[in-house]
Amino acid sequence: MIYYDSLTKTGGRAVNEDCIGSLRKNGQILFALADGLGGHGGGDIASALAVSKALEIFEESMANCELALCFAEGQKALMIEQGRSGRHGDMKTTLVLLMIDENSAVWGHIGDSRLYVFEEGNVTFRTKDHSVPQMLVNTGEISEEEIRFPPDRNRLLRALGDECESPRFEMSKPSIITPGMSFLLCTDGFWELIDETEMLRELDAASTPEEWLAVMEKTVVRRGDGKNMDNYSAIGVWIR
Image (cartoon, rainbow, N blue to C red; front, side, top):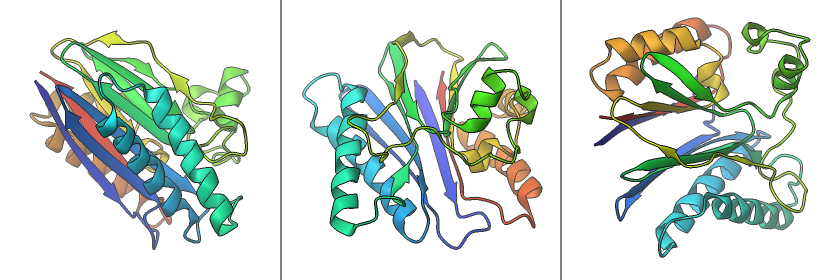
């Protein structure tokens, strides 16, 4: 069985530029999470467009949905909207997609919104950010622990809506799902304020995905209080 819950909040900002969504169809379920970039009305449009386009492609697919098509069509929709509105520089978004059926899971991402996989009390996988801080971690210039708050924290190297022929997203291979696995999709406003050890501890103590997210949110809010905290969003998915 698949159990899940989600949240999205403005944090300390006036507008929520994050967007989340999910859709179940024919034994499959698609989860989508995006964090818009640009502000001034561009980021919230971009994230909503990316999520709605992914869900639309999933709903209209005749059989197994190709997540690559969700990214490609989201890119196309954003480029059209940028051209229509003249807002080429401030209408971009991250995007994380997770698709699960009865036997397997596959995911893809672009930007610095993340997907974590938890199994048997461990973080067995997390997506790597398409960002300057992640590049510095990869080259050994900063540690993994320092990735949350370096000076170039918000500089992305890839995003949906970049002017390129195709979006430079990354895709996983299908992974067999087993009872006990858990997934977390979250924006940087969430993962910056809670580390993996805490995610695991609260996962072990929680009885439902709703409880898991609620307890983690308390940590996020406490640490972000008084710091003009970013929008934050998360989707928790359990295989039980």
